[in-house]
Image 1 (spheres, rainbow, N blue to C red):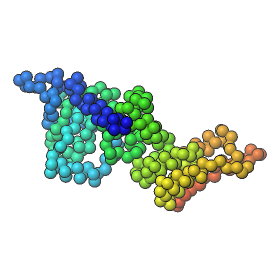
Image 2: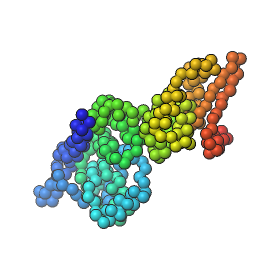
Image 3: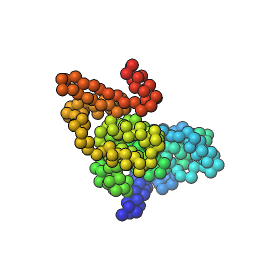
Image 4: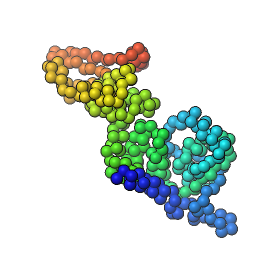
Amino acid sequence: MSTVKRNALGRGLSALLENADTDVTSKNEIGAGVTLAGNTSSIPLSKIEANPFQPRTAFENVALQELAESIKQQGIIQPITVRKLGYDKYQIISGERRFRASQMAGLETIPAYVRIANDQSMLEMALVENIQRENLNALEVAISYKRLIDECSLSQEELAEKVGKERSTVTNYIRLLKLPPQIQKALQENIISMGHARAILAVDDVAMQLKIFHDIVAESLSVRSAEALTRTAARPKSSAASAALPFELKRIQDQLARKFETKVEVKPEKNGSGKIVFTYFSKDDFDRLLEYLED
């Protein structure tokens, strides 16, 4: 089943890019009756602008430089895809990394397919093309999936079919966006893996998620060890001292934990007084909290 869906992704993207109805050059003759449909054109880099729907916001400079050196030696092997905005002006649909590396390599022109696409089609094409890339990190994939759902009005089932994945896989990626920002950033920077992140998601309590995250990083825990840690944390505590907070106080506790990105405990007393306890996990964490509180 998974093989069939993977192939479907290739066919879907190919259909978008090869359909004559989306090719501006299939409707406009160039010169004396010569059309460019199905071919590539060499377009000046100065006439091309970046795609505002590009889901990837960070391009590693070292990797770009390596690609630029390869381009200097081998040229552009895979043309980029652009849409025509107006007279002699184009916008990238896919291939922004190759475009940037070509600029670094000092090229003046780049081979490109020219297509017509409205904004929604362009967003969908850019996102699907980017999701295919193996070097996208888990958070970038999750953000791309969420954008396809929100901005292209797709259900999770439709999205799973479009990108050639099981629905459960799509759901697991999107759930990553529910993690506190500090954990999302660590996932984006490959400090933790998606396996670690999924283990953390097994716990609903934000404060406990942050504690487990800090333990994973501080002790360099494997995914299996992280899963064992979350199983222990998820077990219900039987002592009277661990009685559940009232809903409103639990909501406030979670809000504080998210805001300060650390474990926060609200401890009410029967007389109406109580404590709010902030936990820090390192000297840097302590300094960060102090700086936050002093602002």
